[in-house]
Amino acid sequence: MIIKARIKKKEEKNIHIDTEYIRLDAALKLADAVQSGGHAKIVIQEGDVKVNSETCLSRGKKIRPGDSIEFEGKIYHICG
Image 1 (cartoon, one colour):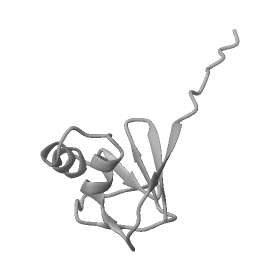
Image 2 (cartoon, one colour):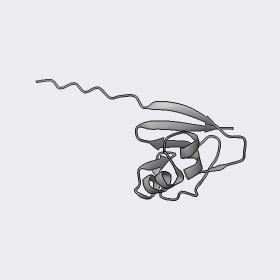
Image 3 (cartoon, one colour):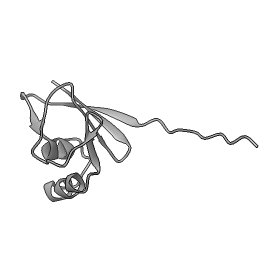
């Protein structure tokens, strides 16, 4: 018996910022990935967010152009 699995490609979106960096919680709000800052805080503290493929628990982490954020099967690329 042969089992075939389809791997869904993750949706990718570019997020443009005009500053040197943006905090992780603010980046999630800017990307419309969360409903509020409180929601961002919860999902970050629960370990649901990855920055550059590593789980991040710090909502104040500085995200700079070139970084990527992964949340709920979507990847957000930060562009300057």
